[in-house]
Amino acid sequence: MRSTRALTAALTVLALGLASSAAAGEKVVIAKRDAFGGACPKCELSGRKLAGAQFTGANFAGAALVGTDLRGARFMGSVFVGADLSRADLSGAGFMGANFTGANLAGARMRGADAHGVSFAGANLAGADLSNAAALGANFSKASLKGATLHGADLTGSLFSRAESRAADFGDTELRGSDLTFGRFDRASFRGAELEGAILTGGSFEGADFRGASLDHAILAGADLSRARGLDQDQLDDACADGRTRVPAGLTARLCNARLMVYVLPPLPPAPPIPPAPRYLVAVDVE
Image (spheres, rainbow, N blue to C red):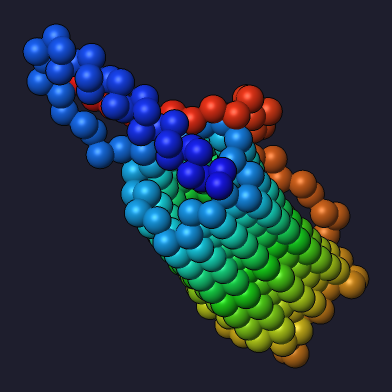
């Protein structure tokens, strides 16, 4: 019903615009573009074709967008807390000041997405594809990333504290200065990843693959790397461990006073604003 009222309002605005332009003898060209603003919590938009859509200051908390085509969409200051975007296609989408806390993005395609500073805290990203995404300073704390693909992504300064990331692919990712504390990364791949200054304290890495990874100045205090694969002595010599650090047999962790590496990141988008009162927008180009 809510979606129907929104559609009716949009069509009314469109009809009035067309009538006015026709009366003036103007040529009207309708842009194939969707723009959404205001509040539409728990809306049902599953399976819709919304490629290139713009969500500005919108509240879609709890909405259903299962399998929706959102390629190239823009999410600006919008709230999708608890929304279901499982299997949605968000390839090339842009997120600015968006909040996806607790959202279901299982199996979603997010290749090449731009998600700097976005909150995915507690979200379900199991099996999601974030290859080559740019998500500096993003928050994945307590998120599920089981079997997710983040190959080649830039995750500099991101938070993965207590994240469930078993069997995730972090190959060739940028994880400089990221927080992986107390996360589960068993059987994850970090092949060729940049972990300079990353904090792995308390993390579990059973069966994780570190071949070719850079661990310069990484903090390994309390990390369990005893069953990790691909680690060599040179990597451990570049990192900083303590007496609680566990490493594979035959290797030695370098004990040192943990030093916090400080990275200057690009300015992150502001926190998502409070959505405005309910309203519905339609984008029309007139020539």
